[in-house]
Length: 107
Image 1 (tube, rainbow, N blue to C red):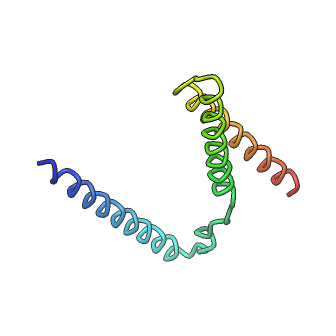
Image 2: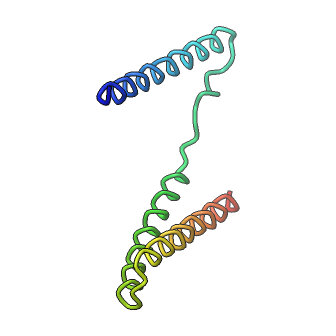
């Protein structure tokens, strides 16, 4: 039974993805048949998600490093790691937000 759950989960995931893609295609074909422009399907590429993830991971790495130094200097154990991880990760997301807002203001 322990082996069946991951196998069924993976199969279920792939079936779900296949049906989602099938229904998206059917929807697009119906819209095109009605004579609407297929330009509505084009997505604008955005680097916002990549920027957020990059700065979050950089902040998390910096937080772990600062947590290590705090642990060694003041023997804080787990508290230093978790607090610095969340503080620096949040700072990274805050910086990503500021960069995105400045970029949107220029447009």
